[in-house]
Image (cartoon, rainbow, N blue to C red):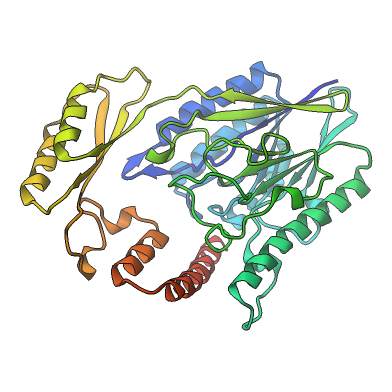
Length: 409
């Protein structure tokens, strides 16, 4: 008998696009998700990481999450969740005993026993059919402490080797506990060749510790991964599958075809099917001079989605001109079109001489930038030599990782 597994990832509950909340987008996706789980007779839902957008989500975000889990439990669908780099392991695992009673299995952080990450999915007749290895985001602290004299490249290689070693250990344990039963591994990491978008937070020292697909243990028939928001298979759709985020989380993802993946295991063979998620809203980004953007705005027609179309304006002018800044502000203030909203505008002057106070584009506040963006803009402004930039980036990445780990404790 067939077993059907549905993969989605990177829900980022609580996410804001600039100051615009995306709760409506996520609620519409959850409604669609529960409907398709029921209509497609899905046996298990797997979510490899980034359930929430921040380690300490709001009460509204937690409510949305638990309401989804209740709806899924009523469908008799086994739910398997692994924590991502945005998630707090302790927060995800806190209600673990209660969730297991609802057939919901959560691995927030890496446990001491690899066997705790293995969940058996049974066929309709009760026989074992498939094993899911639910591996959470692997933090530097899960691997080993790095020697003070260790070079940057050596550290990256030790991180790669550590991640591969953990998956190899889980493969050995899986084969020992469930011999002859097919297995799929979940994970939250960056595979070499993957395409990033603006809304992903760097992991494992700025995403430089990318894993080569061919070095992962061949025991698992497929790797259902999270972290990359663009739907993709870096190995050419053979074994490595990023379902991508189910809703658009940044303007760089505006052209994505959001999807979920369905794995069907029947007669020892697994097929993977991509199912598009109906878009709830459009994202539009207009670039060019202020005059060009004005023309583009005048040509826009009202959207036909369920939710308001969101617009970002990114103007560029050759020479600094306060009149152009004022003209852009007027465009934004006077824009009025049903079902459309400008949520961000900025203007840059190419020939402006920057000082320390001019790190940020006009119209961009520091609150809208990731810490790594602020740091990189500061370095660009200081005109540092290449070796110094590499050294500072390494040090900053280590400090940032320590901060995130403390937030997630």
